[in-house]
Image (cartoon, rainbow, N blue to C red; front, side, top):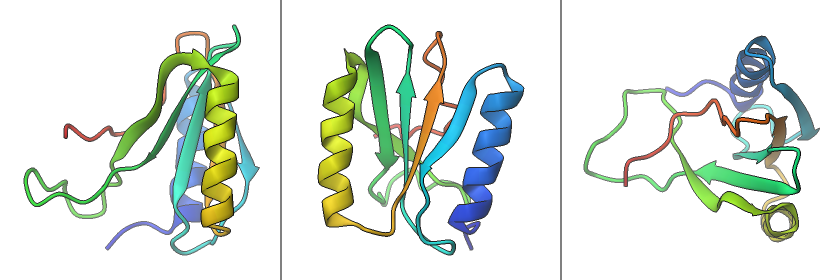
Length: 114
């Protein structure tokens, strides 16, 4: 059983802000199970975008763990991450968007290995 999206986002905000980054919710999604997307801006016009990883039969994560995959690679122009989020929001009106500003580009997420 996975954590509700609202609880996961709250924990992510605490983790990032506690480590010296600035994190905020830009779009609030469905409390229970809205997909979570995370934009990481490095304050130099560059950004990365992470979204839910597709489930895989190999290397299943521990129960309840949310895995993420890069949708826009680190170091891409911030406008590329924004454009991708516009497309995602057209497709899924229940998604969450968290933005993290961190000079080091840390995402504070568990990333898929696939």
